[in-house]
Amino acid sequence: MKKRGGRTSRIRRRKLLRNPESSRVNESYKPEFIELKKWLKDRKFEDANLIPARFPGTGRGLMSKTSLQAGQMIISLPESCLLTTDTVIRSYLGAYIAKWQPPPSPLLALCAFLVSEKHAGNQSPWKPYLEVLPEAYTCPVCLEPEVVNLLPRPLKAKAREQRTHVREFFTSSRGFFSSLQPLFSQAVESIFSHSALLWAWCTVNTRAVYMKRPPRPCLSAEPDTYALAPYLDLLNHSPRVQVKAAFNEETRCYEIRTATSCRKHEEVFICYGPHDNHRLLLEYGFVPVRNPHACVYVSEDTLVKYLPSTDKQMNKKISILKDHDFIDTCWKKVLLGEIISDTNEKTSLDIAQKICHYFIEETNAVLQKVSHMKDEESALINQLTLVETLWTEELKILQASAEILSSLQTAFT
Image (cartoon, rainbow, N blue to C red; front, side, top):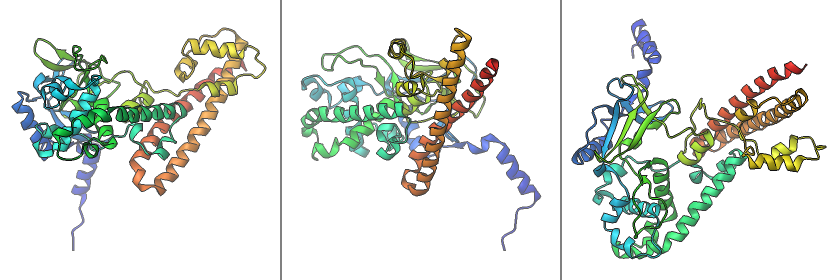
Protein backbone atom coordinates (compact mmCIF):
# COMPACT_ATOMS: atom_id res chain seq x y z
CA MET A 1 0.00 0.00 0.00
CA LYS A 2 1.36 3.43 -0.97
CA LYS A 3 2.27 5.64 1.98
CA ARG A 4 0.53 8.98 2.24
CA GLY A 5 2.71 12.07 2.58
CA GLY A 6 3.07 13.28 6.15
CA ARG A 7 3.26 16.74 7.66
CA THR A 8 6.71 17.39 6.16
CA SER A 9 5.55 16.64 2.61
CA ARG A 10 2.48 18.86 3.06
CA ILE A 11 4.70 21.75 4.19
CA ARG A 12 6.98 21.15 1.20
CA ARG A 13 4.02 21.27 -1.19
CA ARG A 14 2.75 24.51 0.38
CA LYS A 15 6.20 26.08 0.00
CA LEU A 16 6.26 25.10 -3.68
CA LEU A 17 2.84 26.64 -4.22
CA ARG A 18 3.92 29.86 -2.51
CA ASN A 19 7.21 30.01 -4.40
CA PRO A 20 6.64 31.51 -7.87
CA GLU A 21 9.91 29.98 -9.09
CA SER A 22 8.28 26.54 -8.79
CA SER A 23 6.01 27.41 -11.73
CA ARG A 24 8.91 28.37 -14.01
CA VAL A 25 10.27 25.48 -16.03
CA ASN A 26 13.83 25.62 -17.37
CA GLU A 27 13.76 24.45 -21.00
CA SER A 28 17.43 24.92 -21.88
CA TYR A 29 17.97 21.15 -21.70
CA LYS A 30 15.36 20.36 -24.35
CA PRO A 31 16.89 18.96 -27.57
CA GLU A 32 15.64 21.82 -29.75
CA PHE A 33 17.27 24.44 -27.54
CA ILE A 34 20.52 22.49 -27.26
CA GLU A 35 20.66 22.42 -31.05
CA LEU A 36 19.78 26.10 -31.28
CA LYS A 37 22.54 27.02 -28.81
CA LYS A 38 25.09 25.01 -30.85
CA TRP A 39 23.90 26.69 -34.04
CA LEU A 40 24.19 30.14 -32.46
CA LYS A 41 27.65 29.36 -31.08
CA ASP A 42 28.81 28.44 -34.59
CA ARG A 43 27.64 31.91 -35.60
CA LYS A 44 29.66 33.57 -32.81
CA PHE A 45 26.87 34.03 -30.28
CA GLU A 46 26.84 32.75 -26.72
CA ASP A 47 24.56 34.11 -24.03
CA ALA A 48 25.59 34.42 -20.40
CA ASN A 49 22.49 36.28 -19.18
CA LEU A 50 19.44 34.34 -20.35
CA ILE A 51 18.07 30.80 -20.61
CA PRO A 52 14.90 29.49 -22.29
CA ALA A 53 12.09 28.70 -19.86
CA ARG A 54 8.32 28.29 -19.73
CA PHE A 55 6.29 30.70 -17.61
CA PRO A 56 2.65 30.69 -16.49
CA GLY A 57 0.62 33.17 -18.50
CA THR A 58 3.24 33.97 -21.14
CA GLY A 59 4.46 30.51 -22.22
CA ARG A 60 7.97 30.22 -23.60
CA GLY A 61 10.29 33.08 -22.84
CA LEU A 62 13.76 33.90 -21.55
CA MET A 63 14.73 33.81 -17.87
CA SER A 64 17.57 35.76 -16.28
CA LYS A 65 20.48 33.71 -14.96
CA THR A 66 21.60 36.61 -12.78
CA SER A 67 20.20 39.94 -11.62
CA LEU A 68 20.06 42.48 -14.44
CA GLN A 69 20.59 46.17 -13.77
CA ALA A 70 19.02 49.12 -15.57
CA GLY A 71 21.13 50.04 -18.59
CA GLN A 72 22.68 46.58 -18.86
CA MET A 73 23.02 44.83 -22.20
CA ILE A 74 20.75 41.81 -22.08
CA ILE A 75 21.43 40.45 -25.55
CA SER A 76 23.76 41.23 -28.46
CA LEU A 77 23.00 39.07 -31.48
CA PRO A 78 25.59 39.11 -34.31
CA GLU A 79 24.48 39.97 -37.82
CA SER A 80 25.44 36.43 -38.89
CA CYS A 81 22.50 35.13 -36.84
CA LEU A 82 19.91 37.46 -38.35
CA LEU A 83 17.65 36.43 -41.19
CA THR A 84 17.09 39.41 -43.48
CA THR A 85 16.56 40.03 -47.18
CA ASP A 86 20.39 40.04 -47.43
CA THR A 87 20.28 36.38 -46.36
CA VAL A 88 17.65 35.61 -48.98
CA ILE A 89 19.40 37.42 -51.85
CA ARG A 90 22.68 35.60 -51.08
CA SER A 91 20.84 32.27 -51.13
CA TYR A 92 19.70 30.04 -54.02
CA LEU A 93 16.60 32.26 -54.27
CA GLY A 94 18.68 35.32 -55.15
CA ALA A 95 18.95 34.60 -58.89
CA TYR A 96 15.20 34.00 -59.15
CA ILE A 97 14.40 37.19 -57.25
CA ALA A 98 16.73 39.18 -59.53
CA LYS A 99 14.92 37.88 -62.66
CA TRP A 100 11.34 38.32 -61.48
CA GLN A 101 9.34 41.32 -62.68
CA PRO A 102 7.90 43.30 -61.11
CA PRO A 103 10.44 42.94 -58.30
CA PRO A 104 9.10 40.97 -55.33
CA SER A 105 8.56 42.78 -52.04
CA PRO A 106 10.99 42.31 -49.13
CA LEU A 107 8.18 40.55 -47.25
CA LEU A 108 7.58 38.10 -50.12
CA ALA A 109 11.31 37.34 -50.33
CA LEU A 110 11.44 36.50 -46.62
CA CYS A 111 8.24 34.43 -46.70
CA ALA A 112 9.40 32.45 -49.74
CA PHE A 113 12.71 31.71 -48.02
CA LEU A 114 11.01 30.54 -44.82
CA VAL A 115 8.64 28.22 -46.69
CA SER A 116 11.46 26.84 -48.82
CA GLU A 117 13.76 26.24 -45.85
CA LYS A 118 10.99 24.59 -43.83
CA HIS A 119 10.30 22.30 -46.78
CA ALA A 120 14.02 21.40 -46.88
CA GLY A 121 13.72 19.95 -43.37
CA ASN A 122 16.98 18.40 -42.14
CA GLN A 123 18.82 19.78 -45.16
CA SER A 124 18.18 23.38 -44.16
CA PRO A 125 21.03 25.24 -42.44
CA TRP A 126 18.31 27.17 -40.60
CA LYS A 127 16.71 24.01 -39.19
CA PRO A 128 17.70 24.70 -35.53
CA TYR A 129 15.89 28.04 -35.71
CA LEU A 130 12.89 26.71 -37.63
CA GLU A 131 12.47 23.94 -35.05
CA VAL A 132 11.74 26.41 -32.23
CA LEU A 133 9.29 28.52 -34.24
CA PRO A 134 5.57 27.98 -33.52
CA GLU A 135 3.84 25.43 -35.73
CA ALA A 136 0.73 27.62 -35.70
CA TYR A 137 -0.19 31.17 -34.71
CA THR A 138 -3.14 32.77 -32.95
CA CYS A 139 -3.46 36.04 -34.86
CA PRO A 140 -7.07 36.62 -35.96
CA VAL A 141 -6.07 35.71 -39.54
CA CYS A 142 -5.47 32.17 -38.24
CA LEU A 143 -8.60 31.86 -36.12
CA GLU A 144 -11.64 29.87 -37.20
CA PRO A 145 -14.49 32.02 -38.64
CA GLU A 146 -16.84 31.19 -35.75
CA VAL A 147 -14.18 32.45 -33.31
CA VAL A 148 -13.56 35.64 -35.33
CA ASN A 149 -17.31 36.31 -35.14
CA LEU A 150 -16.97 36.55 -31.35
CA LEU A 151 -14.49 39.44 -31.49
CA PRO A 152 -15.53 43.02 -30.70
CA ARG A 153 -16.93 44.67 -33.84
CA PRO A 154 -13.99 47.03 -34.58
CA LEU A 155 -11.48 44.20 -34.18
CA LYS A 156 -13.65 41.80 -36.17
CA ALA A 157 -13.59 44.23 -39.11
CA LYS A 158 -9.80 44.54 -38.91
CA ALA A 159 -9.44 40.76 -38.63
CA ARG A 160 -11.42 40.30 -41.82
CA GLU A 161 -9.32 42.95 -43.56
CA GLN A 162 -6.20 41.11 -42.41
CA ARG A 163 -7.53 37.82 -43.78
CA THR A 164 -8.33 39.45 -47.13
CA HIS A 165 -4.88 41.05 -47.23
CA VAL A 166 -3.09 37.72 -46.71
CA ARG A 167 -5.32 35.98 -49.26
CA GLU A 168 -4.50 38.68 -51.85
CA PHE A 169 -0.82 38.44 -50.93
CA PHE A 170 -0.93 34.70 -51.64
CA THR A 171 -2.85 35.10 -54.91
CA SER A 172 -0.51 37.81 -56.23
CA SER A 173 2.57 35.74 -55.31
CA ARG A 174 1.64 32.56 -57.19
CA GLY A 175 3.45 33.61 -60.34
CA PHE A 176 6.70 34.14 -58.45
CA PHE A 177 6.33 30.80 -56.69
CA SER A 178 5.83 29.07 -60.06
CA SER A 179 9.12 30.55 -61.26
CA LEU A 180 10.89 28.63 -58.45
CA GLN A 181 9.84 25.21 -59.83
CA PRO A 182 13.38 24.36 -61.13
CA LEU A 183 14.54 24.33 -57.49
CA PHE A 184 12.14 21.56 -56.45
CA SER A 185 11.29 18.03 -57.54
CA GLN A 186 7.84 18.44 -56.00
CA ALA A 187 5.17 20.70 -57.51
CA VAL A 188 5.55 24.21 -56.10
CA GLU A 189 1.78 24.46 -55.61
CA SER A 190 2.03 21.85 -52.85
CA ILE A 191 5.03 23.54 -51.23
CA PHE A 192 3.94 27.18 -51.41
CA SER A 193 0.36 26.57 -50.34
CA HIS A 194 -1.87 29.17 -48.71
CA SER A 195 -1.35 27.57 -45.28
CA ALA A 196 2.44 27.52 -45.74
CA LEU A 197 2.52 31.19 -46.77
CA LEU A 198 0.18 32.11 -43.90
CA TRP A 199 2.61 30.46 -41.46
CA ALA A 200 5.54 32.38 -42.98
CA TRP A 201 3.61 35.67 -43.02
CA CYS A 202 2.71 35.27 -39.34
CA THR A 203 6.30 34.35 -38.49
CA VAL A 204 7.58 37.60 -39.99
CA ASN A 205 4.68 39.74 -38.75
CA THR A 206 4.82 38.54 -35.14
CA ARG A 207 8.53 37.90 -34.60
CA ALA A 208 10.60 40.25 -36.76
CA VAL A 209 12.52 43.14 -35.23
CA TYR A 210 12.90 46.50 -36.97
CA MET A 211 16.11 46.79 -38.98
CA LYS A 212 16.09 49.10 -41.97
CA ARG A 213 17.93 47.86 -45.06
CA PRO A 214 18.93 50.04 -48.04
CA PRO A 215 16.72 49.75 -51.15
CA ARG A 216 17.88 47.33 -53.84
CA PRO A 217 16.81 47.12 -57.50
CA CYS A 218 15.95 43.42 -57.23
CA LEU A 219 13.28 44.16 -54.58
CA SER A 220 10.24 46.43 -54.72
CA ALA A 221 10.28 49.93 -53.24
CA GLU A 222 8.38 48.85 -50.11
CA PRO A 223 10.32 49.52 -46.86
CA ASP A 224 12.75 46.72 -46.10
CA THR A 225 12.64 46.70 -42.31
CA TYR A 226 12.19 43.06 -41.23
CA ALA A 227 14.85 40.99 -39.48
CA LEU A 228 14.21 37.64 -37.86
CA ALA A 229 16.37 37.30 -34.77
CA PRO A 230 16.75 33.71 -33.52
CA TYR A 231 16.75 33.33 -29.72
CA LEU A 232 16.17 37.05 -29.21
CA ASP A 233 12.62 36.57 -30.49
CA LEU A 234 11.85 34.37 -27.48
CA LEU A 235 11.60 37.55 -25.39
CA ASN A 236 7.97 38.26 -24.53
CA HIS A 237 6.18 41.60 -24.31
CA SER A 238 5.35 43.59 -21.21
CA PRO A 239 4.03 47.17 -21.30
CA ARG A 240 5.70 47.81 -17.94
CA VAL A 241 9.31 47.56 -19.09
CA GLN A 242 11.49 49.87 -21.12
CA VAL A 243 14.28 48.78 -23.42
CA LYS A 244 16.59 50.26 -26.03
CA ALA A 245 16.74 48.03 -29.07
CA ALA A 246 18.53 48.64 -32.37
CA PHE A 247 21.13 47.31 -34.77
CA ASN A 248 24.57 48.63 -33.84
CA GLU A 249 26.45 49.52 -37.04
CA GLU A 250 29.80 49.46 -35.22
CA THR A 251 29.51 46.08 -33.52
CA ARG A 252 27.32 44.66 -36.34
CA CYS A 253 25.00 43.22 -33.71
CA TYR A 254 21.34 43.69 -32.86
CA GLU A 255 21.48 44.89 -29.26
CA ILE A 256 18.92 45.21 -26.49
CA ARG A 257 19.57 47.11 -23.28
CA THR A 258 17.07 47.10 -20.45
CA ALA A 259 16.03 50.35 -18.80
CA THR A 260 14.49 48.42 -15.91
CA SER A 261 16.11 46.00 -13.49
CA CYS A 262 15.27 42.30 -13.35
CA ARG A 263 15.87 39.87 -10.51
CA LYS A 264 17.60 36.52 -10.89
CA HIS A 265 15.36 33.74 -12.29
CA GLU A 266 12.66 36.21 -13.39
CA GLU A 267 11.29 36.39 -16.92
CA VAL A 268 13.02 39.06 -18.98
CA PHE A 269 10.65 41.16 -21.08
CA ILE A 270 10.85 43.67 -23.88
CA CYS A 271 8.14 46.15 -24.93
CA TYR A 272 6.64 46.03 -28.41
CA GLY A 273 5.18 49.50 -27.90
CA PRO A 274 2.25 51.19 -26.09
CA HIS A 275 -0.34 49.01 -27.83
CA ASP A 276 -3.90 48.27 -26.72
CA ASN A 277 -5.20 44.69 -26.57
CA HIS A 278 -6.87 44.87 -29.98
CA ARG A 279 -3.57 45.77 -31.63
CA LEU A 280 -1.63 43.12 -29.71
CA LEU A 281 -4.09 40.39 -30.67
CA LEU A 282 -4.30 41.52 -34.29
CA GLU A 283 -0.56 41.83 -34.87
CA TYR A 284 0.98 39.40 -32.37
CA GLY A 285 -1.74 36.93 -31.43
CA PHE A 286 -1.94 37.40 -27.67
CA VAL A 287 -3.87 39.36 -25.04
CA PRO A 288 -2.03 40.51 -21.89
CA VAL A 289 -3.82 40.98 -18.59
CA ARG A 290 -3.77 44.35 -16.79
CA ASN A 291 -2.48 46.17 -19.86
CA PRO A 292 -2.36 49.90 -18.95
CA HIS A 293 -2.94 50.74 -22.63
CA ALA A 294 -6.07 48.61 -22.93
CA CYS A 295 -9.27 50.37 -23.94
CA VAL A 296 -12.80 49.76 -25.20
CA TYR A 297 -13.56 51.12 -28.65
CA VAL A 298 -16.85 52.92 -29.26
CA SER A 299 -18.04 52.84 -32.86
CA GLU A 300 -19.86 55.62 -34.70
CA ASP A 301 -23.02 53.48 -34.82
CA THR A 302 -23.07 53.18 -31.03
CA LEU A 303 -22.52 56.90 -30.54
CA VAL A 304 -25.35 57.77 -32.93
CA LYS A 305 -27.63 55.27 -31.19
CA TYR A 306 -27.28 56.99 -27.81
CA LEU A 307 -26.86 60.66 -28.76
CA PRO A 308 -30.10 62.71 -28.50
CA SER A 309 -32.28 62.19 -31.57
CA THR A 310 -33.52 65.81 -31.32
CA ASP A 311 -30.02 67.18 -31.85
CA LYS A 312 -30.20 69.05 -35.18
CA GLN A 313 -26.41 69.33 -35.36
CA MET A 314 -25.84 65.59 -35.05
CA ASN A 315 -24.22 65.15 -38.47
CA LYS A 316 -21.91 68.10 -37.91
CA LYS A 317 -20.84 66.77 -34.50
CA ILE A 318 -20.13 63.33 -35.91
CA SER A 319 -18.09 64.97 -38.68
CA ILE A 320 -16.04 66.90 -36.09
CA LEU A 321 -15.44 63.70 -34.11
CA LYS A 322 -14.22 61.99 -37.28
CA ASP A 323 -11.92 64.88 -38.19
CA HIS A 324 -10.25 64.70 -34.78
CA ASP A 325 -10.01 60.90 -34.63
CA PHE A 326 -12.53 60.60 -31.79
CA ILE A 327 -14.65 58.06 -33.65
CA ASP A 328 -13.66 54.60 -32.36
CA THR A 329 -12.35 56.45 -29.34
CA CYS A 330 -11.47 54.83 -26.01
CA TRP A 331 -12.93 55.29 -22.52
CA LYS A 332 -9.81 56.97 -21.17
CA LYS A 333 -10.29 59.93 -23.54
CA VAL A 334 -13.99 60.17 -22.69
CA LEU A 335 -13.44 60.08 -18.94
CA LEU A 336 -10.68 62.69 -19.02
CA GLY A 337 -12.64 65.24 -21.10
CA GLU A 338 -12.86 68.86 -20.01
CA ILE A 339 -16.04 70.24 -18.41
CA ILE A 340 -17.65 72.86 -20.66
CA SER A 341 -20.89 73.46 -18.76
CA ASP A 342 -22.86 71.68 -16.02
CA THR A 343 -25.74 70.92 -18.38
CA ASN A 344 -23.54 69.54 -21.14
CA GLU A 345 -21.45 67.66 -18.62
CA LYS A 346 -24.47 65.97 -17.04
CA THR A 347 -25.87 65.07 -20.48
CA SER A 348 -22.49 63.68 -21.53
CA LEU A 349 -22.19 61.62 -18.35
CA ASP A 350 -25.71 60.23 -18.82
CA ILE A 351 -24.93 59.22 -22.41
CA ALA A 352 -21.55 57.77 -21.45
CA GLN A 353 -23.13 55.71 -18.68
CA LYS A 354 -25.82 54.36 -21.02
CA ILE A 355 -23.16 53.39 -23.53
CA CYS A 356 -21.09 51.82 -20.76
CA HIS A 357 -24.02 49.73 -19.49
CA TYR A 358 -24.83 48.69 -23.05
CA PHE A 359 -21.27 47.42 -23.50
CA ILE A 360 -21.32 45.64 -20.14
CA GLU A 361 -24.47 43.76 -21.13
CA GLU A 362 -23.00 42.91 -24.55
CA THR A 363 -19.72 41.76 -22.98
CA ASN A 364 -21.44 39.51 -20.45
CA ALA A 365 -23.57 38.00 -23.22
CA VAL A 366 -20.51 37.23 -25.36
CA LEU A 367 -18.66 35.76 -22.38
CA GLN A 368 -21.60 33.44 -21.73
CA LYS A 369 -21.58 32.38 -25.37
CA VAL A 370 -17.82 31.76 -25.28
CA SER A 371 -18.19 29.70 -22.12
CA HIS A 372 -20.88 27.57 -23.76
CA MET A 373 -18.78 27.09 -26.90
CA LYS A 374 -15.79 25.99 -24.79
CA ASP A 375 -17.95 23.17 -23.46
CA GLU A 376 -19.15 22.20 -26.93
CA GLU A 377 -16.06 22.85 -29.13
CA SER A 378 -13.07 21.24 -27.43
CA ALA A 379 -10.93 21.59 -30.57
CA LEU A 380 -11.28 25.39 -30.35
CA ILE A 381 -10.54 25.68 -26.64
CA ASN A 382 -7.27 27.63 -27.07
CA GLN A 383 -8.76 30.09 -29.56
CA LEU A 384 -11.86 30.58 -27.43
CA THR A 385 -9.77 31.14 -24.30
CA LEU A 386 -7.90 33.90 -26.13
CA VAL A 387 -11.16 35.63 -27.07
CA GLU A 388 -12.47 35.12 -23.54
CA THR A 389 -9.39 36.87 -22.12
CA LEU A 390 -9.92 39.84 -24.45
CA TRP A 391 -13.57 40.28 -23.40
CA THR A 392 -12.74 39.75 -19.71
CA GLU A 393 -10.15 42.53 -19.85
CA GLU A 394 -12.68 44.81 -21.56
CA LEU A 395 -15.27 43.99 -18.90
CA LYS A 396 -12.84 45.15 -16.20
CA ILE A 397 -12.42 48.49 -18.01
CA LEU A 398 -16.18 48.89 -18.42
CA GLN A 399 -16.92 48.10 -14.79
CA ALA A 400 -14.28 50.56 -13.60
CA SER A 401 -15.63 53.18 -16.04
CA ALA A 402 -19.19 52.63 -14.77
CA GLU A 403 -18.04 53.25 -11.20
CA ILE A 404 -16.22 56.45 -12.18
CA LEU A 405 -19.20 57.72 -14.17
CA SER A 406 -21.54 56.97 -11.28
CA SER A 407 -19.37 58.91 -8.84
CA LEU A 408 -19.13 61.84 -11.27
CA GLN A 409 -22.91 61.92 -11.68
CA THR A 410 -23.43 62.35 -7.93
CA ALA A 411 -21.96 65.84 -8.27
CA PHE A 412 -25.07 66.87 -10.24
CA THR A 413 -27.67 65.38 -7.88
